[in-house]
Image (cartoon, rainbow, N blue to C red; front, side, top):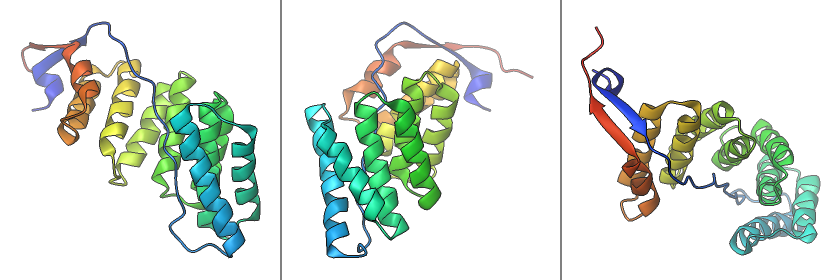
Length: 198
């Protein structure tokens, strides 16, 4: 019996946290030392921009150069995915989606690009597209799945899928019990027993 047939889940008003992007690092040897350095500088720039919560033009330029000079698809995909983080942090969500999509065309298993695209869709108030990207990322059995479950919960809540949202907040909390945000979101929900649907 599914949760849907046994419970009615409602949610009270609460503060939701913004969807978060992630950055990628190339794990394959680059086509040469120069490009290897550029790809690493791009990943470092994306990480630093997230940490300081601001993006410099030089950060974007590093990733653009890395993507342009990369000969291997995996390097170009990583650079595009990282540049999508920079665009996301600059609130240029359409450009972030374009870069994430281009990265996924080169490497369809790049979880970070799926998460970045989903986070950008959330910012553009397109929760169905966001939910699809977060679901695709979760199918990859990623590290830090709790963050993706949390993001998908927000998307599902925006869609009106309260059962799915609650289940995702619970999954995030189960994976990271020391993380307070999923539990805080779960508190807003009320579970009301009801008769099974026959």
